[in-house]
Every structure is written in structure tokens, then in C-alpha cells.
Image (cartoon, rainbow over all chains, first blue to last red; front, side, top):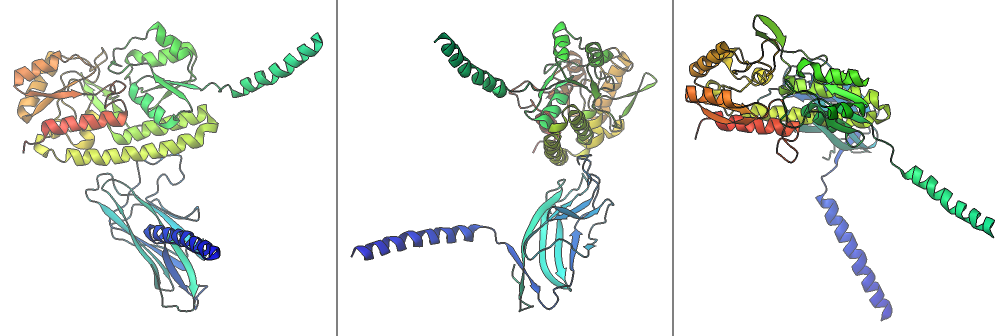
Length: 168
Length: 310
């Protein structure tokens, strides 16, 4: 009898803890998961960045920063992946190939794209990650008018036998 | 026994004294700015690492200010002095204070492209550059560099705070553009007491008939420099501009006697739109006690006075 009681209490405590952590993890924003094809493990990644606006240098940049005059900055793994100091026209796609520094498991790409000061509308940047022509990631970052479009895109790269299966 | 007591006392006192000395906070370096705006920029960058103060109190006029013996003492205790330059500090009083005290002085408008104002046949640089947010970014960048030189080990913190503050200025700029857009272009006429708002008018497109420069009875300085003060000709030009442009309101300023502008308001039949912060921020505890607060309150007042009634 005592054993049954102990077992029941143990089940209630462990079960309650499990339910709590399950509910909590459900509320967390989903980590994007990109499945890399095992058929082409050596194929390099390509990053496409398409701003909806013409880019410009940021007069509010910290002048000492090496990327102070940049119109587009891309970083991953704490290192700069791409930087452009030239203004770009709206809708023009910037392609970064190959994308170095991505690893199996958790990754994060940080992006900052600078609009002109008097930009009259909210604006966006589309970011796509491809491998061998296959889209692994397709995300849009938004910025309010006048503000830089800046943000991080976390995602997971994992390998699988099923090359056509993708999760986001 | 006595020797034992002395030894005991020493073993108790000596570590306490050493501990007290170690725990005593190191003296913070002191930065003294001429104006409240520059002091605010410096404070945003320095955080609690440095002590920042300004010579001018809120509401004081930098053009006509005369330093006091207390100011001399303040500067003597400084490790670094900051000034606006471009002759904002009438007769270069801040430079004189720093020079006499043997203190390093940094002009925070260095590298900034000043607006040239033509007055009395001469071209003078307008010193009120902080009224353009992109210029304010130059002020902040110069201050960051100056503080890094003063306190190299504090540089990472200065840069991190600076980066954040610069982006806050960018957001403020976007907000101002959005607010000003509520005033139709034909009503975007800004008349103030003195010529402090040229950069603001140029940046946010006020006073198109006046080449996007401010309309004011008193020149760029309230002091006695070239192009400063009010003349009968200026008075007449301002009255004519107000009537021609059909200005909706004119504005007094916190640092200047409103008598002249009130006379012009009576003469033209135009209402007083409110009191703007021009050469100084507001008092501690007021909505305009910071640069961002000052700009925000000014813009809200201007928009409220000039936008069409619903």
C-alpha cells in the first residue's frame, strides 16, 4: 500500500513537471529547422538578401565601427560574412556565395540593412538560404519607416536521408 | 602584557585600514560641458563611469553668459572640457575658462558642415547645429572619441552606449519626420524669437519662402556678434515674412525675453504658439530635461500649433 502511494505521488510530481515543461516549450517561438540534403553535403550554401527599399549609409552609425559606412552587413557565428558600402536599388537581390561558418545544429544569421532617413514607408528585407538551388530558409525582416532593418534569424541545420523533407 | 596588547591592537587595526583603503571608490574623472545639451550627450555616453556637468544651468543663454568665480572652480576640478564652438559661447567664454585652468578642451562640432548665414553682408556659421539630428550624431561621435582618450579602459562601454544612443537619435529623427508630416507644407512656417532653428527648418522643410531657414526678429546670437541682435530692418522683414507666408503661430523661447516676439505677435495678429527650448534644455524633472525630451516637446508644440484644426 505504501509502495503504491509512493509510486502515485512520484507519478503526479514527474507528470506535472513534464506537463509544465511541455507547455512552456510550446509557447517558445519555434526554432526554424532546415534539413540539409545528404546527397550534396559538400555543396556550398547561398544566401540571398532582397531589400524592398534602396539602401543608404547610416549617418547615425558609430564612426569608429569598421562597418560604419555599410549599407548591408551580414554576420554569422560572430563573424562578418558580408558587407556592402554601396547604396543598392530597391528590389535588387544581393547574393552571398559561399556562406562560410554554418554548422550542423544551431545557427544564427544577423542582418542589418540601412534605408534612407526619409523613407516614407515601413520596409522589409527578404532573406533566403539555399543549397544546391533548394530553399532551406525563407524569412522576412521588417523595419518601421526611418529605422534600420536589423535582426537575427535562428535556424537549425540537420542532415537526413530524406532529401526532400523540410521543416520550418 | 602591554606589548601583547599593542600587538593585538595592531593586528586588528592594520587589516581594517587596508580593507577600508581597498574599498574606497576611486575618484571618477570629471567632464564639464558648456551647455546642457552637450552635457546630456556626454552623460548618455559616459553612463556612471564619469561625472558630467554643465556650466550653463537650464534656461541660461550661452551667447551672453558671463562666467562666475564658481565656474572657474568647476573647470579647475575638471579632467576634460567640452564646448559647442562656432561662437555659440559668446566671446568664447568656455575656451577662456579651459585655457586659464590649463584643461583640455574639445569642440564637439568638429567636422560638422555648418550652415552659413548671411548677415550684415557677412557670412557666419550658425552654431545651433544640434537641431539637426544628423549633426547631433556628429556631436555624439566626437564626444565618444574624446571620452575614449580621457578614459581608454572605459572605451568599450562608451562605444556600446554610444551605439545605442545613436540609434535612438535615428528613431527620433524618423518620429519627427512623421510628426511634421501632419503639418501641410503651406502651413509649415516656423517663426521664433531668435535664429536658432535654421538647421531644424532646413532638415524638416519649414519656411520654403525663406530658403528653408528660420524666420526670427533676433539674429543667430542674442549677443553683440556680427549679425546678432535685432535691428529695425530685421523687425520689418520678419513682420513682412509673417504676413506674406500667413504664419499660423509664432513661438517664444525659454532662454530669451519674449517681449520682442510678443510685440510682433500683436502687430501681425498672430497667436503665440508656445515656448520652445532653443539654446538650453529644460530643468531637471521637466519633460525636456534631456536632448531627446527637448526635441520631442518642441516638435509636439510646433505640430500642435501649426497643424490644421479637425
